[in-house]
Length: 100
Image (cartoon, rainbow, N blue to C red; front, side, top):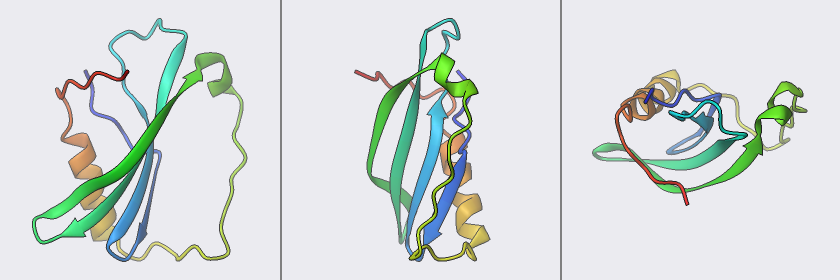
């Protein structure tokens, strides 16, 4: 199974949020899973402190989503952190997780 590829990574100091679709071995499934994880940076690096997922019908994936921004959103200036989180997510290749 391929590693997940983040669609977006937002970093806010020592906390970050990632959004991606979980890669599936069965591409004929009528749904995909959209995943959101909240990360915190600690001494050993980035680790997940929370998250959620939901089923999304594949037919809905062809419809563009509206982009929402927050007035409180800080600009991403920590590109090293963003790269570290993406590398951690991509390191999940071969990880087997059952989504119930």
